[in-house]
Length: 418
Ligand SMILES: Cc1ncc(COP(=O)(O)O)c(C=O)c1O
Image (cartoon, rainbow, N blue to C red; front, top):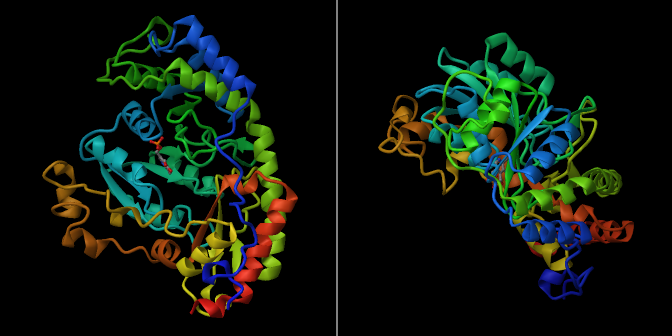
């Protein structure tokens, strides 16, 4: 009988080696009780006191001057686009290797997402392809700092400036990360963060945009508050059609507690990544993507690793991941598929007529399919990428040693999986 747990052997760990998450302590408990007893539970008037305090501290932590809280990290992308003055038919360049929200947000704003491929070294947006995708209709770029990697902000900020485009950083994975010692999210016009339950900081749901431009801050406040102009941010001319996207005080108090832990947690994950990197490189075949040295703090929401089937007896990634899960290390392969191929990317021209010119009847139409071919993303999504969620990076060195042991064991017996 094989030694592999998947085939009836004894697992490296009888229990999953991920730490329980989300984590919380007395700070969340006390904060929730205080909000409960205050009877001030909602987000109106906007910003409500705890949300305002949290937003400022979160923005400062990421080197920006202001933050505007919202219901989630999908809506925050839409808030950013609206605040930046997106108009019907405008084009927004997005990477195709990401969650669908990055591309759905422009569609909901009557704009057109233009997909580009990612770089093989980081699986983040390829700046050369961004430049090649610019047309007279292009208004901006949404880049994503994926998993544990940062997009090339030197190139992307330069391209945005040269062509007069806005830049939004989708930081749903990137709480606490930094590029050249400056917070991710502070390089573009807006940084957009999610606090959904799988994220590095969470209130179950939630989101925030950060910016250092007062007019954009004011516009974001109007938009999340049904278009109202409260006195705190009424100093700019014009009006906007808004929506209720306010955060509750329950969410805000949990996030305050989580922000207080963010720097320590980030340092813990960085140390874990460094440890795993060296150990896994010695084994070979499943190796973390290299860090660009300009990425001075690595957020590691998911540690991105590259799988090489040849080093595992030619076995497909998904079979090896099933074997690792049986050993107690449950990693993800198809965490993302190319966004335009996602089963939920139901973007049809009968609902969103602005898509017709580029995509025919919709993003899944045969016309669209012909123009949407992104080999680096496809290879990563279907063959090479392995995603390790952060709870595996929050344990002890002993836990990391067992993860390494599981990888070594599966590699040694990979031929049994054929
Ligand atoms: C890259 C990216 N952008 C946006 C979002 C949307 O965030 P939310 O789930 O808070 O709406 C997510 C969430 O998974 C994401 O991963």
